[in-house]
Length: 200
Image 1 (cartoon, helix red, strand yellow):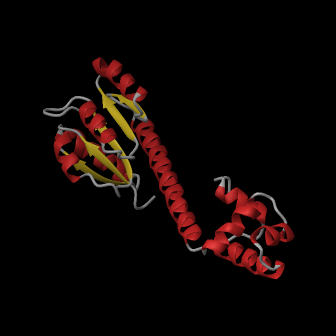
Image 2 (cartoon, rainbow, N blue to C red):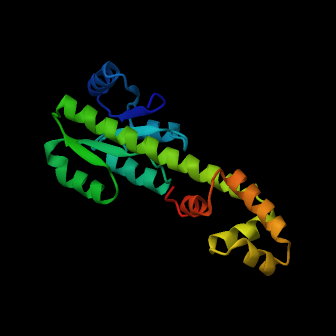
């Protein structure tokens, strides 16, 4: 969680300062921007954390920024801060994939709790992404023959049948099987199947 940041985008300096103080007092890192445009210019794909976004701002609105970030496939969870009259807009944003909205004046504890949930959700997404990349790298490390053997293992075939199908010695299949398990970091065909189906 230490690398996660709450990105605060609000054109009211007093609100940005108050929110930054609130989160930092709870040990949560913050960064803030005075407009949607300045955040958009600074936004990078490797940002981790969540976005706290005012619905109404001078220039590009929070909703327009949200639409733009979706076009850019920005995965950051978004929580909107909204005035009473903006609730229908915030509900529409939820339907488009925003995580939540809180009405001003909001309860500090509720806001912090919601943001911490968003940070945890983002951390989980990044961990899954990293696991997926690691798994892809493991599969890529297999030789062509090892991949052929792995496909047959996953099809539930025993060593003898694999040896017959690939016209190789059973001892060779055993060596390939051992290497596949080692490279993929598993101890059994069941573990291998679970890993590749995303259930590990």
